Length: 416
Image 1 (cartoon, rainbow, N blue to C red):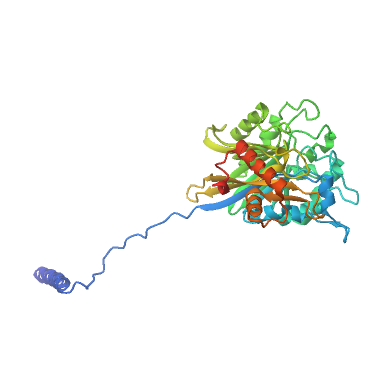
Image 2 (cartoon, one colour):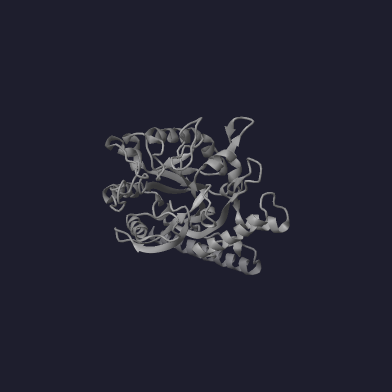
């Protein structure tokens, strides 16, 4: 039996060898013959593509009496601000998300007012939404112009319009929800938005209504210099706990009509960065102030980069200071998220210069318009402009030079 088993094994080996030799000979004679392998290779894996999105931001949306008059439609007895946003809307509609500061109160009619205590028609917010804005900051020095009822009504109107808001609240419970933070989806990138103001133009809130407005100064009715670390740091900790891709702070600070940030602004920005802010969007001075990218180490030992613009200036307003209060921008931040690492960075910073055109010689409904400076200059030079005359043309050119002086020309891609 053992001899028989050995003979069978030898025979099998001989047959296998012959088969292998036959296969080799066939391959030599026919190069198109393929032999299946006993092993399979793993499929190559590719990293998911990065997510890219654009966050656009503008300055103070205001309504002085001349704007109110220009928005009034006599034939209907209603208000329409849409024409003031026409140029801006062309750009904002390309954003994945757009934000600005609503520096007025939607107090309800029929009587409206401008400076010093604003109360604007709901149509102003409607036009902001139509232009492409998604979120409005509501904490600023004019927030309490019509009392707490004005605060609450403004929020009601924004909710009815489907416009997100951050910085003011109708109850302590609303303020406590996410510590007053609004989480936005910016084209697939999540961002936690917080919002604060330095004060309320000398007005105060009753202690049991303190929830209504986020104020970063403890001494907000007097010296405006005692930063509320306890409240702000607790909010920033809550923002970090949400685990969003970015944290953005919209803040009302600085000195009016100054084109450079002061030491207190820089001190606050440094603190916010160390507490986790990635983006700081500033307002209040009504004029442009520079932007910069800052390298820092946060309070948890992480080396990071943060972006701050100290002031956008006005977005739409009737302030007359040439060119300072009529010069503004739409900021465009390209955000890129690495889906493999989960890290999100600002990968491009650019801005578009705008000018608030005042033309009292034109019919109502076209006297106050925010115009893209490059477009306005080109149309005038081509003889196709309906709104820009020779005087306005020179003012816009001066405003463009002013804008480049404050912000630098590099970020204005259209100037290239």
